[in-house]
Length: 321
Image (cartoon, rainbow, N blue to C red):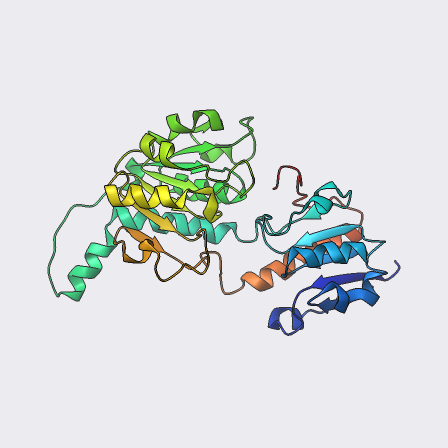
């Protein structure tokens, strides 16, 4: 097998990238810009997009006449897709599946946080107060998932293991793998019907033009006042202003947020002061090994590509995921 060149768009000083060791027959070159990668891009068959402006991806494509495949480290593609890439015949794959399990656990944490009222327990402990109160059983509650992709399936699997009723919303309602953990699948047109039944609403949809502001005031008005909204996908999928109003007015009970319109979350954001909001800094999927797992998945993909096997996670670039 002839040697192939893999160009890695990322910071060579990144410890994870600095530790990369290419398998036999593979020549790796790491650079922060297309210019830094230029000599290797002339021969590169593969571009591994680790991080950086999408403009550098476009420039890399221009300088790589033999490019046959692009892999993006992360699952969300709103930061990388641009018209030339969408229209290019070069296949694009992403990191879907690498981060889903931890996000599934985070959704269960959010449900238990509110069902068992952990903030009240923490306040009582701080005050040395013996506070007896009733809690909810999530096995008697309903989890609704907006965006039943890989992350949504990870949430559903865990929720069903805890005997929850699980509802899912996705564009294609045809039966598929993962539906064994779902009680009913809804089309987007039936979102309000689904929301009216949910105690927890997990938003796990990718950010595309079709999902921007997907969950807004009409959706909060359709949701039970006792419901908890969880966003573990992309911030702008939820209308943030509408969410703040819903939380302040008691239209919904609370929120569990890992993603936001602006990141880092500005100090002046009302979310910081809301006792009914659990916040994480877009790191619910940052396990101790998350970066190493991203590299391992890429090398697994590379082995498949070199062997002529079908790649995993081939993106529908027009759909955005």
